[in-house]
Length: 453
Image (cartoon, rainbow, N blue to C red):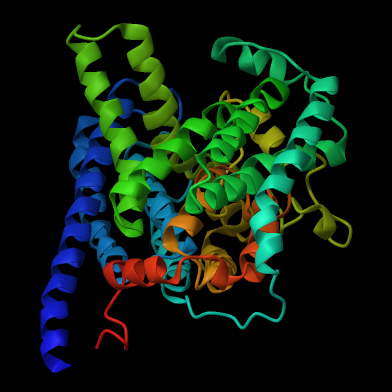
């Protein structure tokens, strides 16, 4: 037994070192991407490049970058997937804050975001113990569930098409999106289907090797675009297909990092090729703007915007949640994204839990406490999904990092179906999955188990 442990420990240490190196490579490419975004004056009036501040921006990133070690030593979980994306968001803000043109307490904001990151990541990464299943869905019902989701999704999409159906390109998307008027219940149903139920069905089909049905799930996701006119709906099928391929080639933790690293790396390569006239201007910059700017810079920029606005305006005290607004006096009679759209020339600006449940709701001093509470909610998702194969969790939650980077946690839980996904994870029968394959992934993806020892 001791001999086997001695063999496993060097392998485990080497895997952790490779994970850390891959994460550091992603940090480096994100910083280069942010440098390109700042020097091209992508956000005039908000962020402006100043060469004298470049050293400070690099120093901020270097000081915070050892946090990648947490991702090297922790197990894969739902929180691991979400936490890595949030780590990059915080890293991006630490870069952008040095080029800020807005007036607020930057020193306090810097301290607050770092403390918030730690308060969020510790429970998100390390609270993963399983929760006893009081209710378990029968294996036969679980096998049939993804097909039922496809039928229900097709019906919801069909009804949505009766209210709005426009085939427009990306340039006209924002123009017509304002005209989308679905009944409230139908709008919620479409978002839940798009962000939670269809990805769950896709994960079930891929895991059970029912690839034709998986393809149908992706087609249904694509059909949501002409109804809702969002980039998420348009690119979601491609994103899930990309995740499935990455999961096939690498274990879940490596797949998580690669899922962010590879698209950003491609964007940087295209940016360089465009600047050297080796690639057409329009497709290259469209990709860079859609991936590098949207995935890396915008969620970080939201922290900049919210810090500035709420340094001079009343806090929300969570009244952006409709149920809270019923019992708490609210200084705002419209959604926060509408307030941001009116105050800044950046369009409708939704933001992550760090900005909404943190900065906007309780202010910079108490933001780390709010981040801790949100981290515990994500940790609940870890516990409810514990025992499910990592690939299944990653695919079924594949769209949620993008959702959580751009909307409040309360909105993600209710409107976007994250809470429903938690429930379905909880009642999913663990016996429905190949135990041998799951245990193999557990040994390669995590630390040595008792059985292996």
